Length: 306
Image (tube, rainbow, N blue to C red; front, side, top):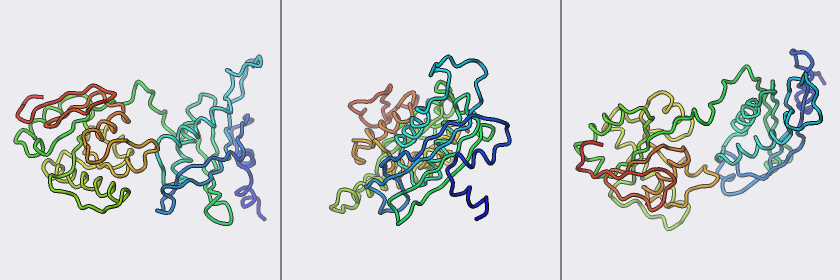
């Protein structure tokens, strides 16, 4: 067996040692860390958990000064397991590749970390282990935004009456002039959605009804762009794009999903606003939700100035 093939199936620590061109680096490793989690792109993988095995190696810069046996002076093993737990709790993912990349990038935020090798394997999808392995270096990734640099968008819920209002373009003009990124949310159309008689499928139908209305709003004003993923929303907030939230993917992929029913669209929008740490939620033409973790403001449909 060639050395390349051997290294491909060896532990990431051996690949780290064989490919290092940066001089002597210290390494910390996590071996055979198994977690049960819901993940996967196939419908059969939804609503059930499977065992995922993590093997991680982090190359770190040696510490020149004496350690004095002080745990605060090293990159702790806990940082690796915490990075895994954090990314698993953020949202339900379809791809191991996405999970591996996010774990590596979180680990590389640590000042001592130079390179991260992350191998993730599914243990229950066949007779063997199915997985991916990636390597990322600190030089490859952009410095992640600190908490106080994250955008705190303004989220605006538009009732159907608000969508039909002659003031709609004027409201968007006013909101576009303000510094915060803007996300628009809507509810379902006034016409009844189909009834399936089954809880899970009905939830999807009700979410898709909201998305139909989102596309109707986008048709009314070309500045409004329908988005369905966190990646799209992050890009839009950073680049001044007005987003209209299509909720199905984010709601269905949420690890700790909303208690609000899709037919209670204002409460669903409030849940979404909280996940993005929105700075404010404005509700035009509908009642405010009973409880929310951010500032709320109601605006009547006949009010031209926001």
